[in-house]
Image 1: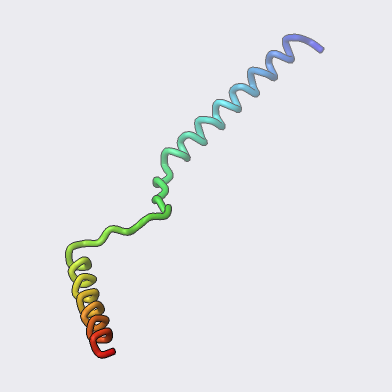
Image 2: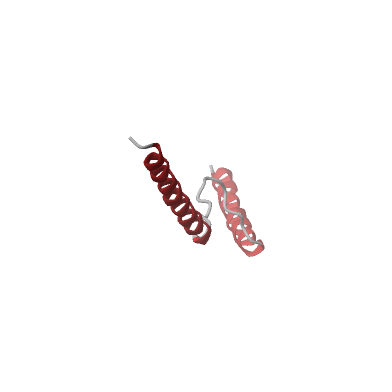
Length: 70
C-alpha cells in the first residue's frame, strides 16, 4: 500500500471524528439538565407543616381519649 494513501485516509477519518464530536457536544449542551429524581424527603412549606401539626394533634388527642376510656 502507498503510505500517502494511508495518511490521507487517516486524515479524513480524523476530520469525520472531529465533526462527530462537535455535533455530539452541541447536542449535549442543548439538552435540558436532567431533574434529580432520587430518593429523599420532599420539603414542606409552612402551611403544609401547620396542617400536619393540626392533624397530629387531633390524632393524639383521640388516642389519649381511647386509653382513658379503657
